[in-house]
Structures are given as C-alpha cells and as structure tokens.
Length: 193
Image (cartoon, rainbow, N blue to C red; front, side, top):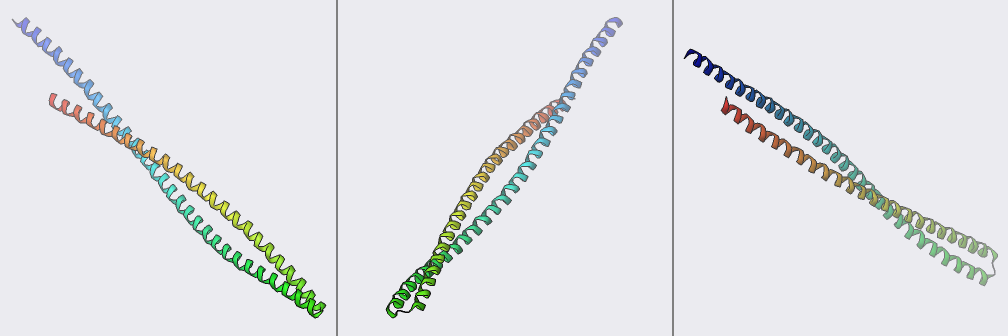
C-alpha cells in the first residue's frame, strides 16, 4: 500500500508539474501580450505626435497663405485704383492736347503747337503707364492663381492628415484589443492560481 501511495503521490506530482509548466507558459504569453500592448501604445503615441506636428505645419501654412492672399488682394485693389486715375488723366491730357492744337491753329501760334505736342506725348506716356499697370495686374492675378494652387496643396496635406488620423485610430483600437486580451488572460490566470 505504501508503494501505491508513493505512486499516487508521484503521479499527482507529475500532474502538478504539468499544470505548473502550463501555467508558466500562459504567464509567459501574458507577459508577451503586455509587451505587445506597450509596443502598440508607443506606436499610437508616436503617430499621434507626428499627426500633431503635421497639423500644426498645415495650420501655419494655411495662415501664411491666407495672409499672402489678403496682401495680394490689397495690392490689386491699390493698383486698380491707380489705373483708373492714370487712365482718366491720360484721357484728360489727350483732350487738352487736342484743344491746345486747335487753339494754336486758330491763333497761328507755334508756341501753343509745341505745348499741344508735349501734351500729346504726355498723354501717350500716361497711356503706356496704364498698359504697364494692366500687365502688373495680370501678374498679380497669376500670383493669386499660384496662391490658389498652394491652398490646393494644403488640402492635399489635409488628406494625408486624415489618413494619419485614421491610422492613429486603428493603432489605438489595437491597443484596446491588446488590453482586452491582457485583462482576459490576467483574469484567467488569477482564477487558476
């Protein structure tokens, strides 16, 4: 009977060793899950940090773009005002030169003729200035188009940020899944111990 008892104890010891070994493997797996959770959390935080930096860069870029558009619009308004003044002045000078030429012809005075010629030249230069201003206005319009392109580029960056945000969400969802597994495994281990 003592031999049976020793055999029973030996079997029970072997069974307990197997259970302890199984429990040790599960605890090791639990540690792995915990490590995976920390890795996923680190990745999530890293992605979130990158996302925040990109968002800040986008915001700064958009503010610069808005400022540039406002400045260009203000310059364009100023140029248009100057164009109107110059155009009105050129028309007036042209009319004055015609009137002066007529009066000079009536009076037979060559002095007035010279003045009329100078006024016509001045009107021509003013007209040329208006044409130059028009070219500048067109250039400013092209710059505004470039700014529009920059805004479109900013929208593309926003799309990237949205994708980043989705990845951050997926990363944190992974963290939650790992945390759930860790919790389940921890509860199971606690019940067995």
